[in-house]
Length: 167
Image (tube, rainbow, N blue to C red; front, side, top):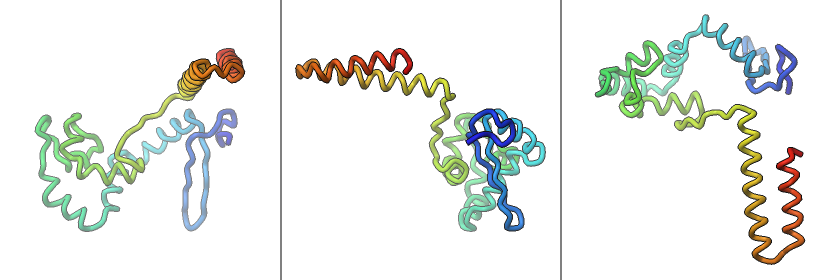
């Protein structure tokens, strides 16, 4: 799917806006999404977004957060969860462990998971996939030679050559 803004690159970010029961979809490439993000950040800061998500939490979670856990301080930097909710950033790496119970629901809501897996740039992803394919083919080639399946070995050799030439 092509980017709705530049009409040049593939869309990798898909936004859906619902206002008064009207659905508006916007498909953006990384560059246009970055520009749109900067525009939106001027109107809505990360701290506002995160505090808004915390408000969506069930009442019992909010009450627990407000009473017991908000007063907990990071042993390294002295940051509190209230500080995080106020500015939208943690004070240091130790904060992630200190506030794990409070951060888990937020991370799941934002990312769908607690664990960050990162993103591989598209060119690097292709290189990684090619390396994986080559390694797999070479493994299969060695196995075919060991089993004296020479026709299969020749076919695999040809496939390896094609992948290495970039076909």
